[in-house]
Image (cartoon, rainbow, N blue to C red; front, top):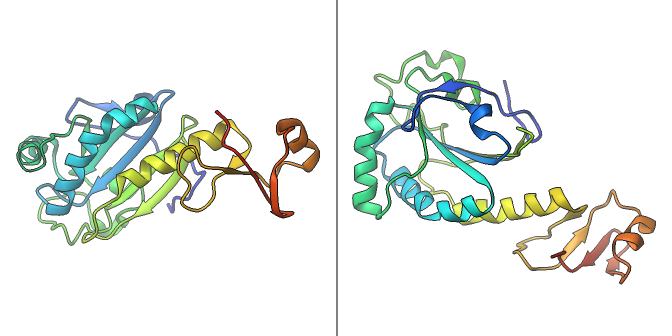
Length: 219
């Protein structure tokens, strides 16, 4: 199954470092970030997990739950967490899914069905496509999907920026322009007619072209 933006994030049950979960039930009414790793004790992922733990208060402020996945059993994650704490200054403070049967990785189309049903004997290179970030809305739909190569660390500051945009545009009929940061001007969505825009923004807007209508970000 190929996943795309606005698809329902597949539900699953799995063991995690914080106990068994049913994914949709665990998300509840929160936003969520699911990010995956090809194997425990890999260098780039070690830096990512430490940084994500440091950023967790920022996600908490936005009502976003974080969950990681690694294609190894849960009982291996504890040893990795100790290494992460030692080298990065922060241990994972969110659940880490164990995926020793590859079930979740295949469910999310990160591994093909032909990959088998065991993580045993598989290297990080075998699982190199298990390097995705999913942002999931309270409606359980995928709002963002990014795939990273093994040699490039993820930018979780950018994931936060995107979540700020997603939450703003879910509340208002707006879009955010290139390199937008919270507080910058925004764009009235194309689905809003000028008559509607006059009601929403009685002070008017800047219009360099009829299809580009710029207003200050609502508070």
